[in-house]
Image 1 (tube, helix red, strand yellow):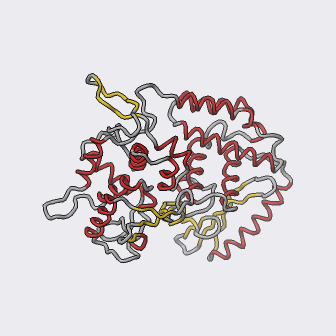
Image 2: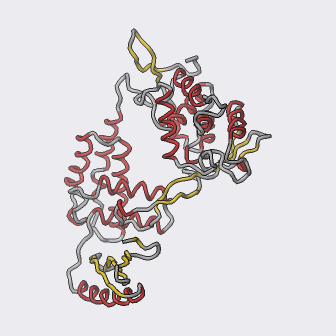
Image 3: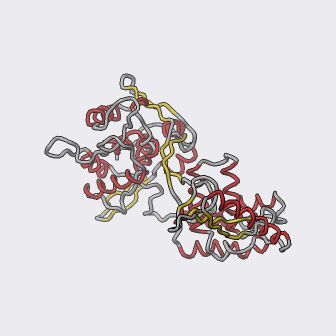
Length: 410
C-alpha cells in the first residue's frame, strides 16, 4: 500500500490487477470522520465509487448530532490553518507537529473534547510535565504556546465560549521560571572551554598517512566555531556565496529536512521527508566579514574539496560532492568529540559551537547587538541563550562553575 503523492487516500494494487482506494471522509460541518474503501479496475473508477459512498456518508452525518473536536484535533487543525495561510515555515510546522504528537496526542487532555476542557484538566496536564521532569522548560513552553494559540483560535471562531488557557498561563510561566533557577555550579549557558577548543581543533584537523583529512567535514565543523553559523546555513552554502578576495560570506539560505506530505493529521509512521532550501531561521540574510582564521579555513576547505569548487558546488559536502543533512553533521561532531576525549556531558551537538563563538566575541569587547547581527539572530536571544557568564574551573581538585570577569584572560 502506498500513500498518494497528490490528493488524499491510499492506493493498493491487488494481485488480480484491480486497485483498492482507501480514503478518510470528513464532514466539514461537524468534523465527523469515516474511513471508506472501493475496489475497481482503475483508480478513476475507484473514485467514482468513493463519491457515491461520500454522498451517503454526508447524508448520514447530517442527521447525527455535531461532535466537538478533541484537543488533539483542534491543535492539528490550527496547525494546518497556519501552514495553509503561510504563517509558518515547513520546518516550524514539523516541529509543532512533533510536539502535538509527543506531548498532547494520546494523553488524557489530548483526547478530551474542547468544550469539556477545564482549568483543572489543563493544570493536571502541565503538572504531569513538571513532576516527571522529562521535558526541558523550553519544551513545556512550546506545549503551552500551542495549546494557548489553538484555544484562542477556537474562541475567535466561536467554537468555544472562552479560552481556558488564559486562566493558567501565568501559573505555568511562574513554574517555568522556578524550573529555570540554577544552582551555583550549574552553567547558565554551556560553552567549550579553551582546553576543549584546543582538543577539537587538533582532532578535527588531523590528517591520515596519505595526506587527506581524517574527517572530511572536520574543517567545516571548525568553520562553525569561527563564524557562529547555524548548521543548516553551513550545509546550504555554495562556493558562489563566498568571495575569497574580500573574505565576505553571504548567508541567505538554510537547508532543512521537512515532511513531504503537507497533511497535519498523518501518523508519524506514514511520513516521508524531503530536503528543502529556504530562508534562514529568522529570515535574516546577511553578509559577514570572515576573520583571518575563518578565511584560512575556507582556503583549506577549497584545497581539500574532492567534490569540486565550481560556483554551484556545496562548500560542505561528502567526498563525492553530495550535500549533507544536519543529522549527518551531528553524527560527525559526535565522533570527533569522542575521539578528542571530550565527554558527552561536557559538550554535545553542534550548537555549542555557536554559543562558544558568541561568548568569545562578547568577552573581547563585541556588544550584543553586533553579535546578534553577525549570527543573524535577535539580541534578546543572544543575551539569554548564547552568552555564558560562567566557566568550568578547577578549584581544590573539584570542577566548579566560576563567574568570569568580562574581557579577562581565561
